[in-house]
Length: 299
Image 1 (cartoon, helix red, strand yellow):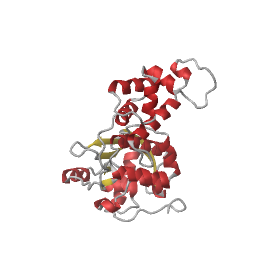
Image 2 (cartoon, rainbow, N blue to C red):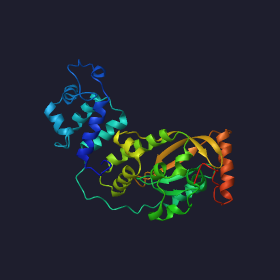
Image 3 (cartoon, rainbow, N blue to C red):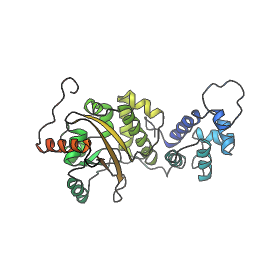
Image 4 (tube, rainbow, N blue to C red):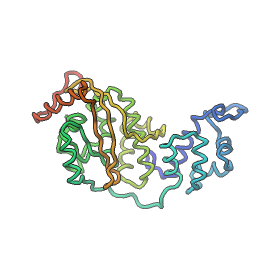
C-alpha cells in the first residue's frame, strides 16, 4: 500500500528499489563498470548477491511474481543489509495474504479494564491508540500532555477521534509541541509504514495515508522514502504550552487482547525536573480549564 492505495506488488517494488538505491557497488564488494544512471546497485547486481536469477528478481520488483519463498526473501534481505524491522516488512510485502475486500473502518473500543488501568496511572501520561494511531482513550495527564487543546471526550466518538499522526502533520498546535519535530515525524512515518505493510486490506489505514500524502508535503516526502522502524521506546523532547521544555521517555506496549491496540506511556525519572513538570501539568489539568495558548506561538 502506498500513498495512493497501491496493491502489495507495487509497494514491494518501491521498497526494493529504495533499498537497492542506498547500497553502492563498493559497499557490496562489486567492481563497477561503466556510467550509472541511477544510484545504488543494478538489478542484476542485487540478484547476483542474493543468488537468484536477474529475470526472476526483475519480475519480483515489477510485481509480476508474488509469494516469493521465505528463503528468497531472506537472501534479498541479507544482500540489502536490511534491519530486523525492514526484513519483517519485506516478508510482509513479498508474501501477501490472500486478497480480500478492503475492510470497512472498525468500531474500536477500549475494554473497561484497560480504561480503569490508565485512569489509575495518575502520575503517568497514558494514551491508548488504535492501529491507525487514532486515540481510543487517554487519561487526564495523557490528554493534557499531547492534546490539551482538544476536547478530552473526543475519543469517545469514532467520527471525531483525534489521530496522533494526522495531528502531527496537519495540526499547528501539535507541530509546535515537539522540539524535534523532524525526528518525531520520521519516527511516526516509519512506524506507520511497518503497520501498513502488515495490513494492506485496512481501509482506515489506506484512507489515512492517502489523506496525508495529499494534505502534507512533509508526509508525502517521508512516505516516499519507505522508512520502516518499530518505534517502541525512546525519548521525546517537548515544548509544552503549560510546562515549557521537558524531555520524557516513552514506551509503547501492545495489548494482547486486541491486536493493533497499543498503550503509549510517557515516563520521567524519579526526582527529575521532568517528573516535577508532569506534577505541575497534572495540577493544572485537575483544574479542568482550557490550556492557555502562548502569545504569538499557537492558534
